[in-house]
Image (cartoon, rainbow, N blue to C red; front, side, top):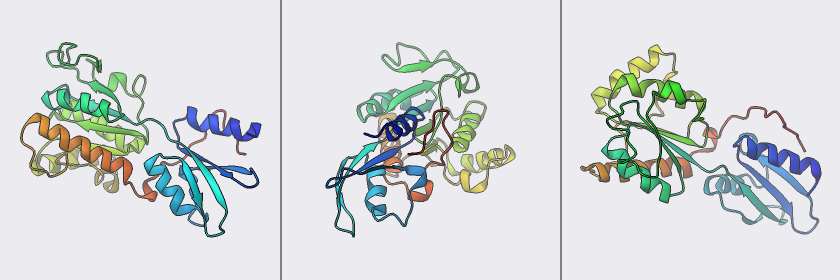
Length: 245
């Protein structure tokens, strides 16, 4: 691989940005396609868009009948759970099995105990104390807010929306969410960003128990990650070691 292209690829990976290395099978020519710069005029646009969502590498052939291999580099998804409640106890192990790096944050030490979240990254602190210094939010992070307490939930929800998190879900009825919308608006969050919040949280599968709600939440988060439209692709910001091949 060309040194400049390799440096650019590594810079994207360090910055947790998705990128695809496109290799012409016949000539060996290579280029990088960044998710945030995906161009509808690219002959492989539809294929690239699908690959970014599925994170699967493989052969592709465009309208020019040239065969290319697409090597997909997508950051591992994270799930930040605000609230060490019963739903979180069921959600955390399931999300880890699904491939998410899971962190649970809750300042209420009566709930956030290692005995209730064995083997889970658990921070018994206020979200403002650990985000973003120890828990970064980005386009490959989903945030689940389930404390039902605005003092704990609102701030990280706002931060996740500002960071372009792929999924932001919040527990509560429609009436509760209507009040939340007003508070987030007062924090300066735009209406179109607030509209991205999944509330009431989780797919509508008739879930009743905490474990069933956890299933609905995880399924909705996976759907948001794998089916997000191209216009929600992360905006690109320059990395310190950024190199354009």
